[in-house]
Each structure stands twice: as C-alpha cells, then as structure tokens.
Length: 307
Image 1 (cartoon, rainbow, N blue to C red):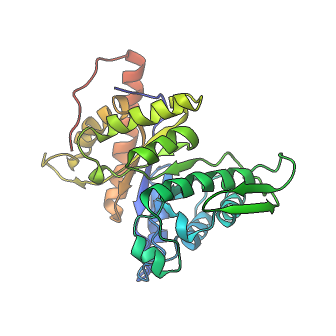
Image 2: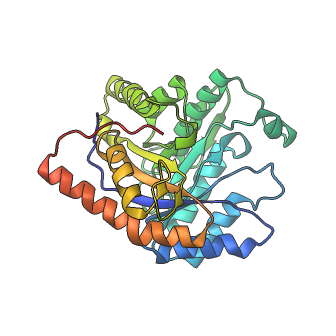
Image 3: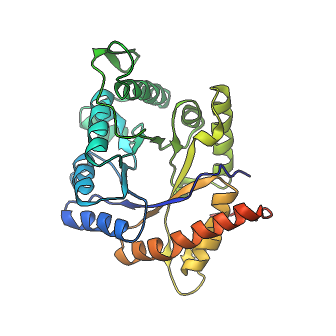
C-alpha cells in the first residue's frame, strides 16, 4: 500500500495519425478545454501513418496555452540525447514551462534498425537510457563549469556546450516494465509511466517496491518519483466491468489506484472527443475531490483493484 502524496493530475494519450493531421491537434485543444493537465502522444518514428511526434508536440504547444505536453514515450534510439535535451529545453522555453520528457528505451528493435538506429539487448537498452539521462541533465545545467563530457558505452559527448536551461525543472518520466528499468527509475528518473493493459496483477505494487528500494539506495526519497499510468476504458450507462461504466464507477475504481498503489497521474488512452470531455469534466474533478477527502480523513484501506 502506498500513497506518495502527489497532487493528482489527469491527461490524454493521443494517436498522432497523419491521415487527418489537424484532428489530433483539435483533441489536444479539447483536452485543455476539458480542464485536463496533460496531453501526451505516442512516438513511433518508423511508422509512416504517424506524424512525427516532436513536430506535433511543438505544433500542439503553439495551439494551447495551459496544458502540459509530453511524448508517451519518446523513442530514445532514434533521438540522440544531446540533441533531444536542447530540443526539450527549447520547447519548454517557448511554451512557458509546459513540457515534460517521457522517454523510452525503444521496444521495436527491427523497426528501429530499419531506420538506421542501433540494435540493443535489453541490458544495453537500460545502459543507454541511463547514459542518456546523464547527457540530458548535463546539457540542461549551464551552471556547471566546462562542457558536457559523458564517456559511455553507447553515448560519448566530448565537451558539448551546455544549455539552454529549461524554463522549469523538466521531469523525466520513463516507460518501463522490467526490474532493471524500474531500478533505473528509482536511481535517476522523476516518474514511472507504464500502461495498465500491459501490467499483470500485482505489477504496480511490485514495481513501486523495486523503485522505492532503488531510490533509497541512491539516497533519494521514494516520494520524489511520480507514478503515472496510461489507462483505457469506455463510458457506459451500466456496470460492464473495470473502467466500463458511468463516470462515478470510474472514480470508485481509480481511487484505490491513487491511494493504495501510489498513482498520481492518470492518462486516458482515447481519441474519442466525447470520452475526453467526460474524463475531464466529470471523472477528473470527482476523483481529485475523493482523493483529497480520503487523505484528510485518513480513511481505512480499500480492497485492491485487479484489472
């Protein structure tokens, strides 16, 4: 059981399809209008049916005013970390501090290598992501003297100039499932961003434990690390199962994930405009209120949710 005390955030996970390119931007704007906190886009640079996610993030940032934006998650093997760091800082400056960095090791090896990227074993992917975090944070820190120098097995940076400094402390959220990646989150990252459909029963609790232990070993407080979760479902008039029902049912079923499993950011995987409106106008405020009420009351533990 874990509640790390973070204020709840709510967002959307949109498909960057290019057949009707302005529709995904309209959904990003709708997410903001619905009162949501975050808009994210999946990143598969090797799929010609998708817009380039970085270009879309920039365009969406220019068409919104308040909402935060992130990749969910950006494909590291096809995006060199030093360049990515400068691009992220630039977008953060241009958007007024509204960019967060969702990052992944790249799970589709054949597609990555077809685009000219490296083929890595699972262990090498973790090493590369760890090195990339070092590069990115160093580029973001112009207060340090001298250039950026990282002599890794996968990334070598030899005196690159630092900067620009982002408008705010950009969070690095990692998409991860396996123990080595989870330990990396505990040691170096700011958030864990898995997708609920890919999690086995008990995976959130086990993952939190691994992250917490790794954080403690690195001298960090587990509460420094935000726990995010991509979720899917369908709004219906009656109870048809987990996240298959009316908004009130969603609130009741998501509340234990927030207060018992530590999830403080819920991201709806949907391109349906009506669902996004219900998510922002009805579920998000009700769940936020319920969590705050139970936190104040110090209520009894709720039964674990399985899905």
